[in-house]
Length: 202
Picture 1: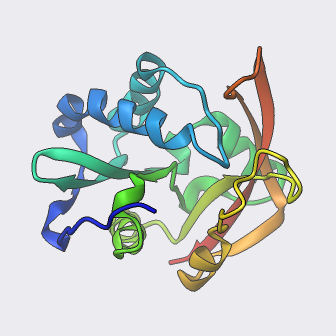
Picture 2: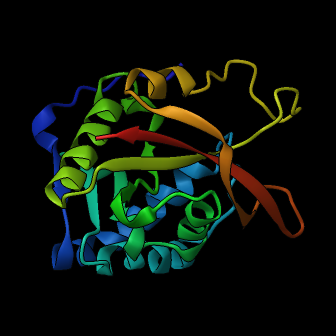
């Protein structure tokens, strides 16, 4: 069981533009650390993640919501107008007959286990939704990896986040998905994974 560590709302802030650059190394390491666990099982490198996150930092409408414990970054969430983000995400919406121009894409939300269950995830969503509204966008979307319920790698105590996302007002879109490939833990090559979108009107 993870020990619960105290944190307060004032440690969470939304950052964009040039102020993000000094944070990228720490954010890259955090993303590798958190996504190594189920359900992503991502065996990534901090160097690749730095380049990936720099694309968000360089986008005119991109922003990171950062959670600190003192000076240490313990969680972060990203967002970017879909029109400025990954082509694969835009193409998935276009293929489904949806206009990506009014959508804010929430790229990821990572938080160390000891800090979970204290409302930080809710704060991450609220801050990104506020940023999307400031940009004049009317919809938010994110995608989550699909895993078989009987996957033997699934931890017995794992609780899916579907209920949390539903309570935030997001609706799963079973016919709207995208495929990304990444190196999985204990795999010898990159594995193609399907991710399904969840959306919410803002």
